[in-house]
Image (tube, rainbow, N blue to C red; front, top):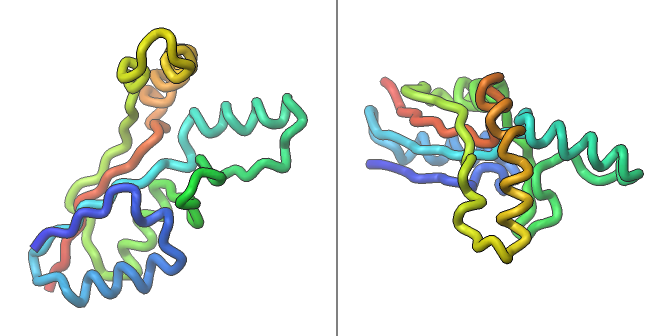
Length: 143
């Protein structure tokens, strides 16, 4: 049995309860894929700095907090490891990565293209520092 939770966990009010329920359904050796935005990414640090410089420091520090459905919890490596440990799920593989060329999905006449191109150096620095925008983890139930 495989569960696939990409961009889900950051929207869950009680992730421990949610993962415990999955653990109760999951067979030994079963796998769960989880993908979440990394709140400790370089992009988010730059975003927070820009908000402060523009006098908007009261804006939430969570990534995309105003886009529905709202993020209720922000994750980083330490929190993921903590919650997996608390729910008796073992990390088989976890990595931090980014979507550096996402801007290429836009045409040059779209604002998203230019914003993504402008942010590309930040994405590369975040990658070098292991502070990219996304985490994915494969976790499993053990005995």
